[in-house]
Length: 505
Image (tube, rainbow, N blue to C red; front, side):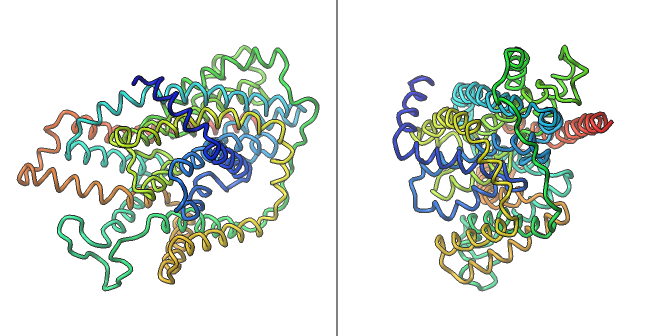
């Protein structure tokens, strides 16, 4: 079957009543957590991992993808009305969106963000469906050395793409790799670093670590910030609909943002933040109304929001085809796949195509749901900001504890939840990213297994890792991925600082 036949088959799976319900739950939760500052989709997916342990894999993964997309949508609401991005990828939206809201044009700002996200998500999802099969065909010829090089690329990706320091990212990664060595060696059957504790013979539970680091650690960190006082929410004045002039000024930025966001999201070391910064810079250079930038230019909302949502679909390209997570949420979704004994990659397309194409097709449905949910229910999303923060953090901690007990009723597992939660809190305090820890735990055993197989085949010859053209290219990309984010991050921060300085003036 060709791509469109697979996509049509996926639509029939995604359109099943149960899966539609999962998608609706996902986009609703995602939008809600996107609206709440500091509570992102990665935390929500991590919380739901133990709860969905015994549910249908396809439905749960569809719900997780809906949360991811919804979080990208919802982040724009607080950026525009509160000048506080719900997601880091919505920082750029706040530059122009909040100025529009202060000028009484919050409605058109929210509308162009929602419609732009819909257009970008639609185009990017189709692009995902078209690109994925070609990457899968290439990856099917991989042997042990190619897979090891791919794992190295994944490790470099998460180390360099998360946080402000590559060194801190590598430190977090090695913590995860160290945790991955605990348990029984897959090849020799010997126990490693279990310290005589029977509960450690099966290794560290990925679900427990993910919930502890993202939910418990994040909640403790946010609660420790204290009450900073009430934030001023800009009221949505006048009509929420866009004028003809707004449409004329928005449609090109939507398309340009999509073209920028999708490939950057699909890059190993991409991520939505870089695409939004580049989109904003592009619109500022191409605008016919340069005097409005810094004072509420609608192009400065339309382009970055389109890039933001397109990058979400782009992130699923390396995740589904190669098993490479390039965002924190993708890392937790990778844990979700493994929770059901599934390993994202080329073999998943061959062994379980219904699940993969159902997941891809569900993104089209999720986009339509989000467009319907966002604008009519804007008042509801704004009211979420009135939830007392202590209630919110206490609820997250309670849900994390109950979910862990439900998935693995063990006193030892609760102790691990607390220990890793405190570790996650300490890492956040000192500026260490936590996603590489989870990725190291998930991919560490796979990388070790493939390396040992490659060395066994070559009788210990280490040069075999670079004699393969594919492995050599992947290792070269890993080297580029280590350097490129440093350059792009420095450029993006320079752009943001100059825009912030101009807006303050």
